Amino acid sequence: MNYILFCGTDNLAYFDKWFKYEEILKNYNLLVIARDTNDYDEEVKKYNQYKKHIHLAQIKPKTVSSTVVRKELVNRGYTKNLRKYLYVDTINYLKKINARDYWRKSI
Image 1 (tube, rainbow, N blue to C red):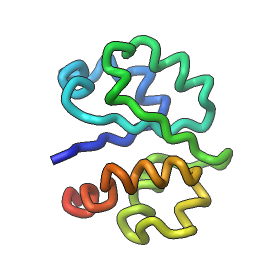
Image 2 (image 1 turned 180 degrees about the vertical axis):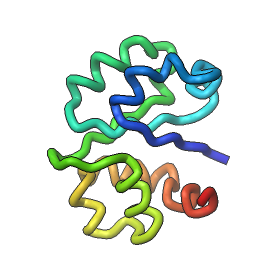
Image 3 (image 1 turned 90 degrees about the vertical axis):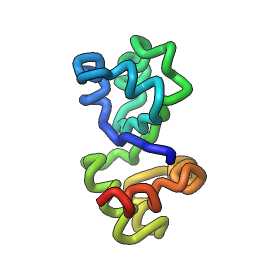
Image 4 (image 1 turned 90 degrees about the horizontal axis):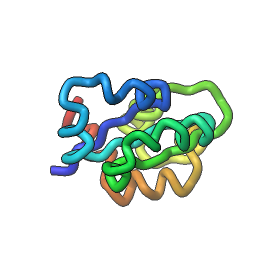
């Protein structure tokens, strides 16, 4: 099973304080919701050895949390409504890794 953890760049800044964070980054994918890629670029540097498991989902410049995006995806799927929050490339990535099915099963 492919597990994906959603978080914002604010959580990425302190991810190294999480319990067994290296194990998480080694074994699972982390999708970082970023309002500003400058924040992401700076924060992701300290996790360079795990970069193949850390993916950027830049949101459109609106105030939205990763929880809102996750709920929208689970409840409505890959609809045009999701495009209010995410770019098409990000939505395509979520489809590729089958994110909706995973989160539907985990709720």
